[in-house]
Image (cartoon, rainbow over all chains, first blue to last red; front, top):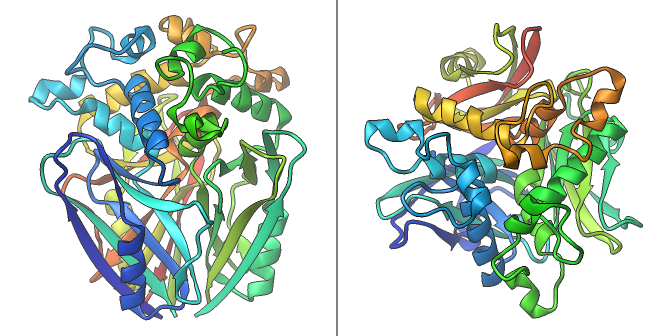
Length: 153
Length: 153
Length: 153
C-alpha cells in the first residue's frame, strides 16, 4: 500500500471564503503514485470545512448568505428574524465568554462537515463533471491548515 | 491491497427521492473480494447525497418536509415563514440567474453530505441493526451517477 | 495492508450528550500497528453522530441548544417560533406513529453526520491543535455502539 501526506495553509483576506483546491488535491494524488485508492481532504481547524460543489459564484454567495441565517454570527445584526431566533438565548454564544467571537463558525463547521473522501481511479480523482473541491473558511484572516492523505496502490 | 470500483445510475420519477442501496453496496463489496477494509459511497452530482438511516417511510417523509424548510425550493410557495426567510433576499437564488432552478438541491447536498464511508468486516458491511444506506436525490428526473469504491484486503 | 476493528458502547445518563473519544481512537490506532493510513469512526445507530470540534463546554452547550431549534424534539414545547415551525405540519413527526419519540434525533444525525475519517501519520491521529473527537448522543439512556476501523501500513 502506498501513502502520501500533504498539507496546505490558507490565510484568506476575508473572514469567510470558498477556495477551490481540486487541482491541489489532484497534485497530491499525482505525487503519491497511487492509481487506485482514496484521498481524504480534511480541515485541521474547527471553524472551517470542505465542500464538493459546483464552481459557480452564485451558489457560493447563496450558500454563504444561507449559512449566515442558519448559523448566525453574533458580531453583527442578524439578517432577519430566523437568524435572530437561531442565536442562543440572550443573543450571544456561550463560547464567547472566553473572548472568542467565532461561535457561528463552529456551527458552520458542523453543517458543512470538515472533510470529504474522494475516490481515485486510474490515478485521477473520480469526480462527476461539476464536482469541484472547496476549502470553506468561516473564520479566516489567520493561517489555517488542511491535510490531504492519499492511500492506495 | 485490493480495490474495486462500481457506478450506479439513478433516474427517479420524482424530483426528490430516497433510494435504498444497501444491497447494491454489499454486492460491490462481494465483487471486490475484500474482507477487511472500507467502502466509499459517494454521489457524483452536487444536487444529491447519501444518508445512512432507518428504512422507515415516516422518517423519509419527515426528512423531506424538513429539508424543504431548511433549504427551501424557490419554484413553489414557501411552506411557512421560516422557509420564506431562509430563501435568499429577493426570494430567488443567485444560482438561478443562469437558468437553473435547483439552488435548494445544492444546499440540501451540503446538509446531507454527498457521501458515507462504511467499514467492511469479514466481507460484510459492518452496520448497526437499523442502518440502511440511501441515495438521496434532490433534483431527479434525469440520469445521475454514484460511485462505490472498495479498498482493503 | 493492516486493519483493525474496535467497537465502543455508550450508555449515557442524559438523553443527549457529547462524549470525548479522541484517546480511545488513538488507542485503536496504537493496537492496529498502523503508522500511515486512515481511521473511520462511525456511529452504528441512526440517532447519534460523530463530530470533531473544540473540547470547550460552551461550544457543546451552544451546539445542543441550536440543534434543538433546527431539529426540534416534539416531546417538549418548542423553544421558540423557529423551532415550532421546523416541526412537521401538525406538530409531530410521522416517525412517531410507530410509538417512537426520537424523530428529532434522526434529523440531528443528518445534520451532524454519523462519522469522520481521520488521517494517521507516524502512528498518530493527524489532527489540528484544537481538534477533539466526540461521540454525539441524541437519544441515549440505552446501549449504543460505535465502530472504529483502522486501515493502513
